[in-house]
Amino acid sequence: MRKIVILTGAGISAESGLGTFRDAGGLWSQYDLEEVATPDGFARNPTLVHDFYNARRANALNASPNAAHAALARLERDWPGEVVLITQNIDDLHERAGQRRVIHMHGELTGALCAECGAHWQAPPEMHADDPCPECGAAATRPDIVWFGEMPYDMDLIEKHIVSADLFAAIGTSGQVFPAAGFVMQANAAGVETVELNLEPSELSGMFDARHEGPATDVVPTWVSHLLGTA
Ligand code: APR
Image (cartoon, rainbow, N blue to C red; front, side):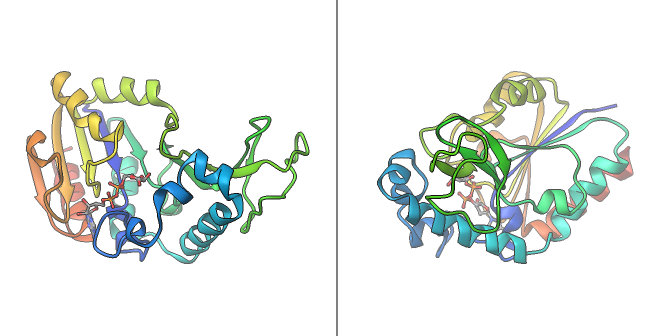
């Protein structure tokens, strides 16, 4: 039975009240990403960066999964083949909707990392620059988030899934940030059927075999019901 690989972006969490990055009023119009989402920004002002992610961690905690997250969890549960979900999002709404296989290529707000020794642990609700690492004691803890200029997680695994998929779907992403923006090209090169579900045309819309335009809470459940009807 067909293998479905899905990539999600901020658009799938928009209707849960979490801001996107590049829509009008998005996060990158409120904050300078150089200051809060780069290793240099963290080195310059770790407190500013922790404050930024503490606020996003609180938002995510207060948000609820929406019908699009629920539909993807249903697809994973009821689809007779393999479903692999790759997300650029750092919230845990997919997991809280019941999704079991989630690859967080940009890390997670629920994760903490020691910049000194590389230890990973469950992030507390609030993190501070002088929190000691539970492993090595260094005051070098950071959110376990992949910043601009850093290598996303699980890239080899992600490539394996994309080129071995029968269907690749990109949901709620503007296609402006690599390497995620390149996944549809890898899928096309491997002869994988591709579909985009997005509120409006993205940078990459022309690269997809098919498109469903509209809010995720509308187009994703419809798409999943159609797929399951064909299972
Ligand atoms: N339903 C579906 N799509 C939506 C909705 C919605 N309700 N609202 C917005 N969108 C779409 C927008 O049209 C846009 O194409 O979601 C996309 C959001 O794009 P971005 O804000 O660029 O978010 P994303 O593509 O996830 O950004 C990728 O950039 O800043 C980095 O690491 C960050 O993971 C992020 C990456």
